[in-house]
Length: 179
Image 1 (tube, one colour):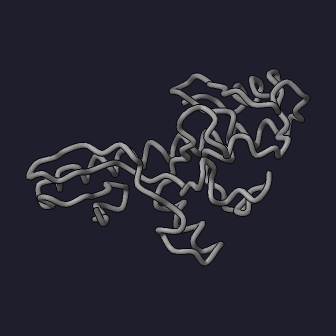
Image 2 (cartoon, rainbow, N blue to C red):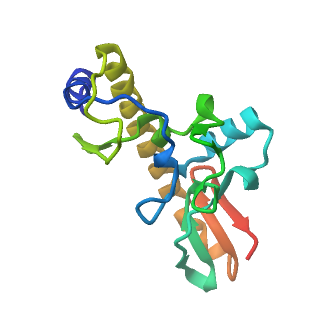
């Protein structure tokens, strides 16, 4: 696992200040998906009073399993006309409960390597304290994603119990969804 100080140093050297432009919330590179785990969905639900279906949609790539079940892994924030449903103008209406991917964008840890996506906020000055916060969030995000993946793997064996059904496998188990 990468060290907090080294990640923070890389972030500070690259420079980043969120400009709150909202462009990262739009479908600009063909996906526009913000992957979320059940814990994140529930936090957004608690903060907004919305239902699961108002917050999240199944990841759109489905696979065929035993007995004709159709399945996918995980959830994505709901989208509307190519942007996140929580985008209001250029601002996030769920900023306090936004998912890990949103908290850490444009940064991502790929193993021990820091990956950086395109963003208009890159290149400016970053305070050391801000870089440490982002680095800490990246490490927590990576840990949460590993736990999520391990729990999902533990539920894959249940596919045979859902012949002919459309399902989502997440860290909480298997959820059936309407066709």
